[in-house]
Image (cartoon, rainbow, N blue to C red; front, side, top):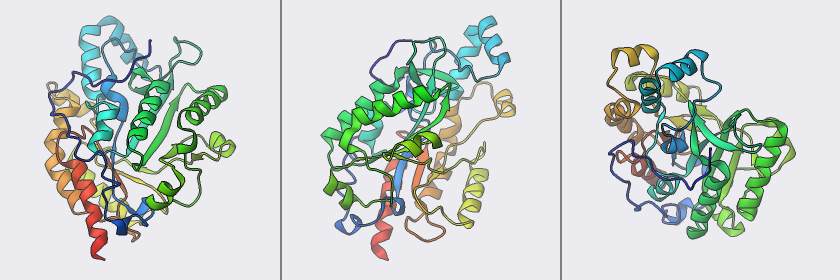
Length: 324
């Protein structure tokens, strides 16, 4: 698989998200500049990089053997079916950042048949974009938006050896350099701006985190694994009732299909499932409140983030902190 600069897929006719939120952090009320990031409301994208999946992308080696067999026997049927249920975003990473997304869910894999350091993203299918190219794209965007901060969650590592982890961490340090915020107490925007830091990098490999102070441990993600939006909201409310984690954490409003649903709805896709549930889920989002209390939310991540007012809804929750 060759590398390429990431570009939006032609998978959907969803409208392009405007750039109105490209600098929303720097535009926040100054009273919020001293609120730690884990107490702000931050929009995120679930499975950020799936917009660059295509029919030429191989299926992940971790998927069941039956699926690989079906792809060999009936590729014209199987591959489009896999793509329409594995694609969660249609905006490129730059477009997502322009739209206001500040948490990126980066699922990284080494492609077995590729070169020694052939690192791509994965969600059932490997992406066409290379990890190093995408991190560079994010770094260049940040240079153009010096008061915006991103939280990068490198996770779900597939086929990664210790050497590959070291190679990837080396790429991260080389690309972001002084933009990286070393782990410690979750900082405020004012603290980050004063240090010229723009990246908190969560890395779900404990051995790598122990070796590198630039890496933060994995950020908890509340994944409901639900088909129905009502069931997902019930799950999220249950998680809230147990109290929020002490640091950064994600509440995912992404719906998840199961085999039964796919068989009963053969003409559907993850996009259609998401759009059907968005009004209910966005109503839940608008009812949330950031802050330090037990039932408060922090990062809220979703699929097809340009399909509604989701990003603006999440950013708008920060106004509630000014009423306290």
